[in-house]
View 1 (cartoon, rainbow, N blue to C red):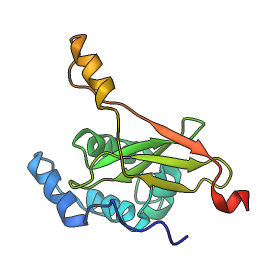
View 2: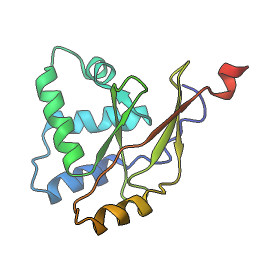
View 3: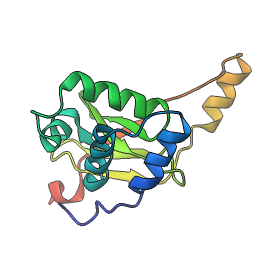
Length: 148
């Protein structure tokens, strides 16, 4: 694991479980384990990687997708997509919440961008009468290591 994947955006496990309770979700063993796998990763993970970490025996993929969807719904997980549109899942915390990433298209390294400048777009959408807005934005490039 390279040194610039620190847990700078990641909620602590307790605050995530707290949020599940706030939304009336039961804190099951399954959800606890999923939360700690995502937490330990400290960076966005593919469903395969998550499944591997949880142990394929104990967790079927359908359950896992359902859990992740529920987590995304209540805002404890955000989905990042790589350049091919593949979903990667990341825990987010209350403080930073939503943020964007730049992803290396060679090695797949992911760095956080501590900013979201989407407000003008949202304002324009609201002027058109839209509400309950959400968006996705990822940047792709070649990292300094890969450029060597």
